[in-house]
Amino acid sequence: MHSRTAVVAVVLLGHAMLLPFTWAQNAGFVKSPMSEIKLTGDTFELYCDVVGNPVPEIQWWYAEINRADSFKQLWGGARKRRVTINTAHGANCVSVLGITRLTLEDSGTYECRASNDPKRNDHRQNPALSWIRAQATITVLQKPKINASDQIILSAETHAQPFTIWCNLTTTDNVPQESFWMKNGVEIDTTRTKNKDTSHRINKAKADDAGEYMCVYTFEKAPNANTTIEVKAAPDITGHKRSENKKEGENATMYCKSVGYPHPVWTWRKLDGIFYTDIDNSSGRFFITNRDNYTELNVLNLDITTDPGEYHCNATNMIGTSGTTTILRVRSLLAPLWPFLGVLAEVIILVIIIVVYEKRKKPDEIMDDDEPAVPIKTNSTNNHKEKNIRQRNQK
Ligand SMILES: *[C@@H]1O[C@H](CO)[C@@H](O)[C@H](O)[C@H]1NC(C)=O
Ligand SMILES: *[C@@H]1O[C@H](CO)[C@@H](O)[C@H](O)[C@H]1NC(C)=O
Ligand SMILES: *[C@@H]1O[C@H](CO)[C@@H](O)[C@H](O)[C@H]1NC(C)=O
Ligand SMILES: *[C@@H]1O[C@H](CO)[C@@H](O)[C@H](O)[C@H]1NC(C)=O
Ligand SMILES: *[C@@H]1O[C@H](CO)[C@@H](O)[C@H](O)[C@H]1NC(C)=O
Ligand SMILES: *[C@@H]1O[C@H](CO)[C@@H](O)[C@H](O)[C@H]1NC(C)=O
Ligand SMILES: *[C@@H]1O[C@H](CO)[C@@H](O)[C@H](O)[C@H]1NC(C)=O
Figure 1 (cartoon, rainbow, N blue to C red):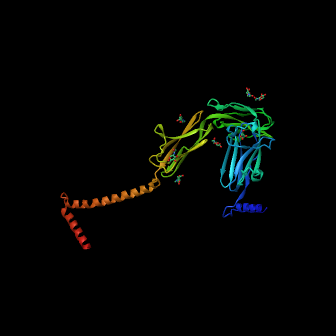
Figure 2 (cartoon, rainbow, N blue to C red; figure 1 turned 60 degrees about the vertical axis):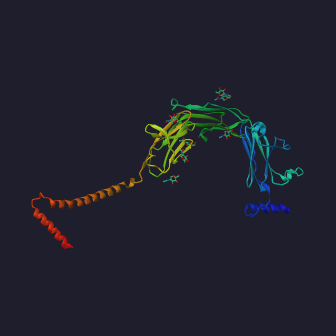
């Protein structure tokens, strides 16, 4: 009794994170495994998260349905390597039990056992006292069979033509509640019906109609059943910039968006005259980000000599290919200064003209003085003398 109050106090203190030094703490569940209903062929994972000091050990145990008295320990690699157990020790101990390719025989009770009792593996100790346990029931049901239409390939000839995809629930232990259609993981409105046969019609096929379609059947007491039907089309580029205009030193962003399915492999190249060349990234300034139907080319710290030109994005999938170009223009940083520089240049030229003219004027006068051909030489000499006198007077 006394020790339990101490433990409670420690847990409370521990949660308030006031512990200046380590205290012993019994193992306790933070997260325990949850019961689930699964279909044959699927996968399940059970989580178990335990706190305690020292960090507890986790084990997984299994008992067949209605045989709760006969638990056996489960190990990674069991059941023809369909069982995996991943355990991580940090502040807590977290363990994940996974079973793949489920069969009906995997149904049963799965138990997470945890303990940090130092004597937990001592055979004289009663395990019920030293281990804490949490159980989950896994029920595996036969997966319903769905007969569905084959994949559809939209080509140039079938564009604007109608197409129909269909699903037919052929065998199931359970009565379906409803069925509906999804495209690329999103439910298509107004496709819910209560029929075992369901179909979806597109009246005018476009590349945009390509994608991953799925018919989904819902059941009251079983997981959804579904089948995927692929509608494929060559990529078609539906968005890009015609041009990108930037100043040197800035960053440029070019992108392309596509429709079509499967999602394309994207490449960027530069148009060099009439040839496409791989982008020269020796400067390390080119960055490409690809998402399913979107690609982005970023050029950092633009260089006015090497970077301008036409950049071509190429989208290619198994059905076809498509591409388009963006013109990258890079302006000089001095460009906004040009009008001012023009005025400045005019002023400088004007000043030069004036200076040159002034410099040329004086030698002309002297040459006039010495000009022997000038008829009235005396006048000129007089002028010269007068000028000299004036200059002397000024001093
Ligand atoms: C699936 O449907 C097709 C066409 O309706 C039919 O020929 C085929 O036999 C069906 N398969 C099964 C397993 O029901
Ligand atoms: C769906 O399957 C059932 C039973 O196999 C069959 O009778 C029915 O004709 C099928 N419907 C379609 C559209 O294939
Ligand atoms: C489709 O079926 C798979 C496998 O059974 C299941 O994991 C998935 O959740 C189902 N998807 C939908 C939307 O029902
Ligand atoms: C260009 O991009 C880099 C990296 O994203 C960033 O650090 C820099 O500030 C950007 N330059 C301009 C002019 O926006
Ligand atoms: C691109 O893909 C995303 C998610 O896959 C989708 O939401 C979006 O509508 C798609 N865009 C185009 C243009 O296909
Ligand atoms: C260009 O080089 C940089 C730096 O080496 C690198 O991070 C980037 O991924 C490269 N870009 C391309 C398109 O290869
Ligand atoms: C895209 O690149 C592929 C492989 O280099 C080439 O065969 C195809 O013609 C290109 N598509 C376009 C539209 O340029």
